[in-house]
Image (spheres, rainbow, N blue to C red):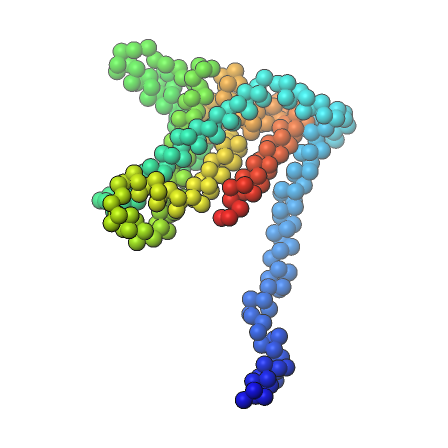
Length: 312
């Protein structure tokens, strides 16, 4: 019996070598798949991501209007001008404010609604759809809709003010109020996305855990605090990551809503890049903004993943 076992575990079984016998179809098919699919993807990534990033870094060291070949090398002068620019400082503050509001209002609101809509109640699917619809709506369309809502002459605010008999507020024309109007739209627009993430996370929680907490006499708050929230930890970290990166890249919603105005009070880094780098044809300065934004996003992304998401 031992000799037979030794022969079976030896060189071959029915003429098939042991290494070939245990080689999975996935392993055998991996190399052809890589040869077929990797070069096109790598080529597209290089053409549309790597090369543009390299060109932006190169242009950031030149004073250039976008025509011809850049020849006026200015070194780090564009970065000096950038960080001494009051509008860019405002853009940095606005991006930070959007991140803070997203983390303190948008994400908690999404968690609360997800818990409410995770229950089996009549019409829950309709409520989920209603709250998710703003995210489905195109950012440009949402910006145009809210620009009409905020309009002090013909919009919804004007109609409400006329009905109440008070002076119409021109929210988007006020340097102090415009950014808060933008923040309200940001929360309205994107909380539905985070809500759906949390609903998916809630559906992955074992119901027996919640039943055990109820048997132990836990209240609704105690179940949320000690059971639901810890089990949603990975989803919360993912949602926070999306909120931070999305806040840094906010552009499509602001341009039709305020265009960065009034007086640059609602600029973000990306709208500042568009305003100065594209519309004003200061390509070198705009490229410097792109480099700064890239460094910030990459630093936050890798740092956040290494610190908070290393076990996810």
